[in-house]
Length: 108
Length: 427
Image (cartoon, rainbow over all chains, first blue to last red; front, top):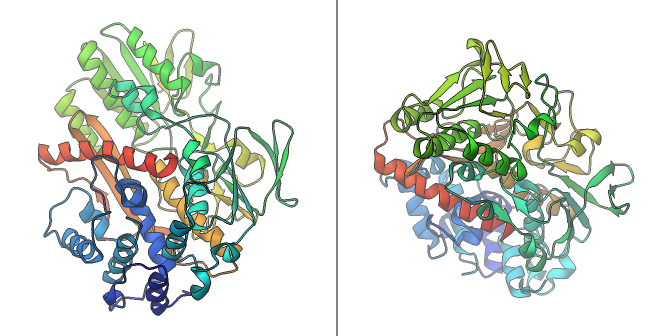
């Protein structure tokens, strides 16, 4: 990994984006580029830049805190879902926080 | 650049963490741009995604997309056209947004030759185009002759409809012309092939049409395989919606199709089956240009680096989508799009001389069994020393015992997925 988690915060900050303070959780740190590599996959169902044109919820109005909470609840099953539980189980806490920061920082 | 403002570029480039010197990014993004020219062959789920995401990450990169068709017709949802739930127009997409909003140069032509040493491609029109990096996303080619008597001419009588377009229309017309009480024989291909749940969603959609219009008809699926994607969910759905209408024959039980006779309309497996309509999906390999350029192995698929999709045969060339060997990932439009995006990020990093970031891929394949009855399979993928593997404990298929409301929600999300992914790729 070329970019430290400190650089994630810096680069997100540099672009004027919302920064998730807890991005340096227990799991392996996640670089900004790695967060982007995870988050762009979300657009295939949730629409370009998280703006859904159809029946799947948009991500645009969600804050990073919202996204982290939703993903953790999907993962634990606390919040019922069709497919999101199956996806959420694929990410560590640190990854969830990093991709939430990326999505929340997209142009509204 | 038109709609893509400098301001939004700054945000996106930063957000993509596209490995730019942080301090200077906001002041001189273009000076930090990688430059260079990427040529992308194929405007489908893989190629069009890659072209868009290259420009999204770095507007300093010139991207030329070479696609034969003026409009792209998706294989996803082509089964819904067969079932009468969608029309051809609904699955046809233009390249305007890629050109106007993202500044991709779209060239409607066919690549006839790739010169890896000279870093150029030759087009049917006679023109040559130089590249710094090449992305090859040609989809599949059909292995004519893998079933005796089945070639391009035979496909005009027994359509494969495994590339959406005229073949889809032909199969739909044949179903419309068939008498009630007719038999539709489907030949399902051996692994690996494009869209693993596709033949079974197709059987479902044909059954939906027949149940409504020709209820005495039957569908016989002759399979080269002994099991298939989402099998339990499909078979339970068939029992529920189309009892007695669909018969599936496993390869080991006589399902392997050896030959066809288009004059007598016979599909020849262990037994000879007379068909009123025959949908023959033959074995597949990487798209022709990938094979011609020496990008494929002896089985006809292209080995690539799992993090960058750079060819293991020719450095400087990336192969994405159905044509590539992508470990645990299926040959799906979703997977191709995911690969296209990650490949774009890798190319941007390579052109800037930066380290490639860790990657994550996703696939979600929805299938429609009947109206208000959708099912899915999903996975998140990472790269380990074993290549691209699915994250353990994540993903999987829809639950077998889900209530009707769950199936209905997944049906609704199937349409939502299509709306989103096509908007994400072709705008």
